[in-house]
Length: 134
Ligand SMILES: [Fe+2]
Image 1 (cartoon, rainbow, N blue to C red):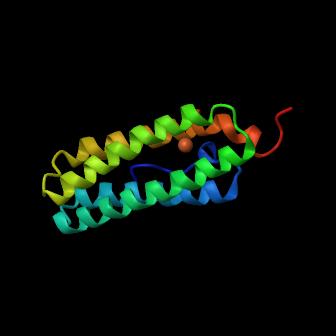
Image 2 (cartoon, rainbow, N blue to C red):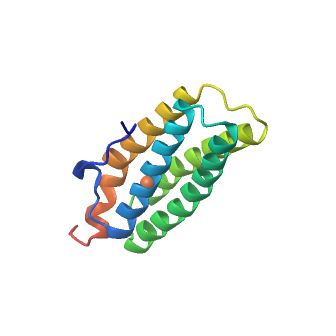
């Protein structure tokens, strides 16, 4: 069973963002499977590298959408992204050093961060981005 099940509750209604969120969820699920199946450090490291790259490109896309829409909490939202970018960079450094231990704890953290972020933080910009806010 996948670590994170994609449900309608996770959808923002903004096509490009939903597609990228689905891709991120899929990567976290792959990381979970690789860790659980002991698929080997190489596979785990490959997914961590890919996740690091994809998180960063996704955040840039999301930030540009928020900024262009004139979202009033853009800087607060970006600060949360910055913290997470740094966290994923550390994860990548650990992978490079061959120090990826406690994959279970790492994937649970990623699951919690992403689902909470999508459900409670990303949700807040939807009205502004879709132009429904007066
Ligand atoms: Fe976000």
